Image (cartoon, rainbow, N blue to C red):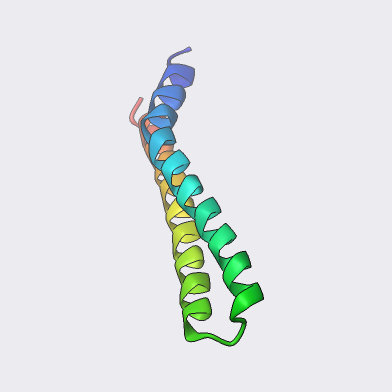
Length: 77
């Protein structure tokens, strides 16, 4: 039971951060789609794609930190 509580408390600490990154990523994806139609060869289009990749990596980093914290909590017992 303790492990389950530790698991959920660590996950909920990062839920808001992950949700915010997902919102930013969704907004950026929409801008990329609109921009691609209007200006497919623009350097700004490449910048937007790079920013989307960066946001996706941030989501992955937060998820990895959750797993690391959960594992550390389990190993500390």
